Length: 205
Image (cartoon, rainbow, N blue to C red; front, side, top):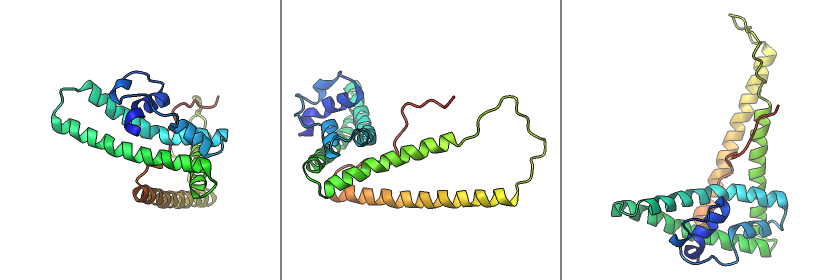
């Protein structure tokens, strides 16, 4: 099913209408954006986080399709490798769409998983911006002594506490990512990653 609307779905996510002929006819009415929105009962924040979460998945597919379109005379092995990758991508996205469709029509485990995925993405974005806003402001006229001031015991304890927290968070995130990868392998779908790239951001004034 995805073979027929893969390129159009990618174009929908990226605002690109070119190259649709690569994958054939128009895609059916059920597509990723609508499915992700319905899966969280049209909660605006959750559906936006789901789009952010799955966008890199479609970005990777768009890159491979563009490579194939721009290199029609490439070696057979090179093209076969990418076509095989797209075949696996098609199967996994097809299963993901079915998963989102089930989540949209029931409040069972698929709906709970989808809701949690949106929350994971929101949490990661929140942590990113929190770290950014905690950075010290740049002061062009500020001077520093030639010999740095020794760190106090209170500051040292605070730094050690922060490092322990970051290590704990890193281990917890790693364990969660491993569970997500196991679920993907078990159901042959893609749940994307928790860490989402920040596409547009400007520092505070």
